[in-house]
Image (tube, rainbow, N blue to C red):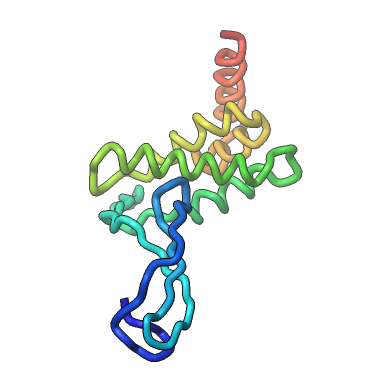
Length: 153
């Protein structure tokens, strides 16, 4: 590792700690020549996960995009940001564990709704109404009936 201060090619590791749920390692290093201390992060290089949109376009998976949708759905609801972040991490972990390079946006939407229905019903209905693009009140009522059936089980 090259020192960012003097560009010497020798550094030693002073301390290593796991971060990001063990998916990365934070290392404190010191230059052997000038004794400058700095931090590096080491993580596994993951294959890009591509999302195939409804219209056929493709874009890279983004946890932030899912989190923004969840935050909007949970606005003025008693749901902690940490819960929403956990949902996005679970979804990404599950998708990556499948070992596929591409995933349909519909699959991600269904995964979000499944988890959100367990966290907050109002937020679930908000998310579902935008995601499923309810055309009229009857479709909306049918979704509510399905939610009630699930809850009674």
